[in-house]
Amino acid sequence: MQDTSLRVALLFGGQSGEHEVSVNSAKSVLQAIDRGKYGVETVWIAQNGRWYWGITPDQVLKQGVGASAPGEFGRDGVQVTLVHDPENPHFMALDRRELPNGGRVNLVFPVLHGPFGEDGTLQGLLEMANLPYVGSGVLGSALGMDKDRMKAVFAQAGLPLAHYLTFLRAEIRRDAEGCIHRIAENLGFPCFVKPANLGSSVGISKAHDNLELRRSLELAAIYDRKIVVEENIRGREIEVSVLGNDEARASLPGEILPAREFYDYEAKYQDSASRLLIPAPLSPALQADLQATAVKAFRAVDASGLGRVDFFVTADDKIVLNEINTMPGFTQISMYAKLWEATGIPYGELVDRLITLGLERFRDTRNRKIARV
Image (cartoon, rainbow, N blue to C red):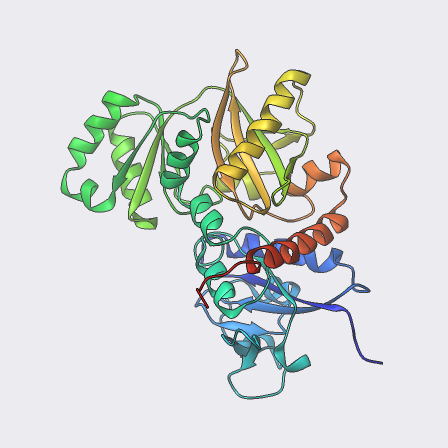
């Protein structure tokens, strides 16, 4: 009997510092996806950027995320590339061996975080190949990754933000003292220093004085050519998940109680003392305001499919929008999924809805003319 199920390529790993987060996210998706409804192929992107068909998240976790060659996985895995033929998009083995179904899939589920996965570059690749995929498109992904441009769009939409300044790496190296003076004068201490294009709090520091600020700027400049510095907001850390395309909806809000001074990479993924309160203890009016603002932020950057919107809520219940993540951590215990579970959508159903939304968005974006003929 011919397999008539919709074929999904689960794309995971990647070159960013969030490689391991991606592998764990993909493991959860692979465990939860309905195999009666979907045929699933796994494609792992090693940290050197090479793509391998047939290697599973469990194999990567067992071998170690630093693995970079199929030989390290025994006889499993074959290096592949994506063929950009809009009439016949497919994966092709570089050694010319035959892939299942000729390497053709109906949709790509890119469970990738950070640069070259969540920033619009991969999305552009899939658009050129004429392949449907889960999540935001090129613009939404790019704006969701670049904290400077994201904030500019949020400000233009009239959304509440903390004060911030943006610097180029060359500017910092040319006149570090001048940059430090501007930050101290306009934002004060403490302040947060962030690479503009990175996730999972990698490269982020909280600076309390000029010396820490200089070190923080130097650290952030390792990770990006553009650095965002934000004023410190004293408030509760609240997150809201968003699901949908044109008719997006927001989940119940959740609150983070970080084990460290701020919710850095270690507090997110390594320190079990960090706690999540779901739902967050909020008044009905404040909850509704957060949900409405989350959807506005989602629309402002032209996101689609999924997004997690992060806020601060001050002691007087003022909302400050921090950022949106267009491909947030996606394990079953990640905040994004747990918020939807509390709102009434279990993880397996969430995976199914995202695939449906990806196909819906593909049909909608292809329903246009891009030439006069």
